[in-house]
Amino acid sequence: MRHLQTFLMIAACIPAMFAQQAPRRGHALTLQPKGRQMGEIRFGARKKMVKPHAALAPNAVTAAPGVVQVHVEEGKVFAFFVATGTIPSGSQFQVSITIDDGSGNPSSITFDPVSYDSDLNPGDFITLPNLDNMSDLQPSLLVTYTVDLASGRNTSEANGDFLIGASLGYSDLSNFAPIITGTSVKIASNKDVILVINGFFTSDTPLVVLEGSVPPASAITRVSSSEIDVDLSQTKGLDLSSLSEYLLTVSQAGFADTVVYRFAPFADGTYNQAPQ
Image 1 (spheres, one colour):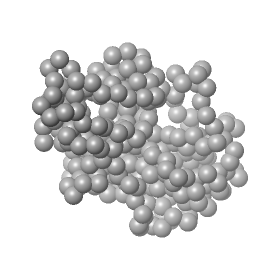
Image 2 (cartoon, rainbow, N blue to C red):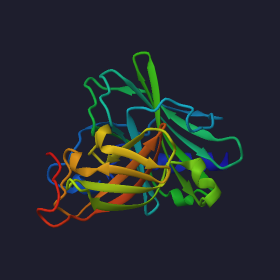
Image 3 (cartoon, rainbow, N blue to C red):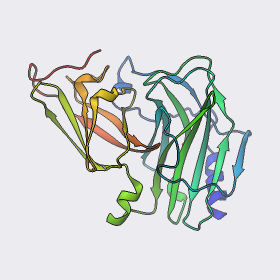
């Protein structure tokens, strides 16, 4: 309970309007950011504490047509839900933040559901509650952002998490998959630019997001349990001629991992540019 009380105190100190947003890397730093912000979930009076919260288990949920991007920078946590498919207007989004200190009795804050009067298209995003001073939470904690999506009679879910004061050993990695461990880029024989993502991956169909740029399913190949390839030349909106940074997310079965990815361009004329 002490961890939950500290968590709530930190949450209460965050301004309601979130004046300081995350440094959206890559395209978000240009004059014409890709994607469309549909809204944001805010801390406020209308939230409820739920204890205990059901433990999350991979493959136990239907994956939502979107990913939860969670990025921790200098003790601050920035989170977004990015659509990877069309989400019809009127769909309800319910957000919860769960903390688990390993005691077997995790706690969560669940926010009131919200809906929008227009469709969300691939790359559209919702800003989730930002957190500050998370380094004050000790000892080890697992913090999970969950977006439950209700569209008609269909329900689905997207999750993103991070650890505080703890790390994973080798035996833990497969249980927390997907996990991104590294990236590289190559030019295929047809001159398409291929992003190679290494890590620990499940057998589930992967979703990939580079912030507001969403590769089509045809551009994503799960090569093995340790490699996913993405054809960047088939990913609309990417500028492959410039050095850029992106929040790169891989999601499988409703669970996501996010890293900061830096792209370096190849020599002109040696590759196929992405459609704009």
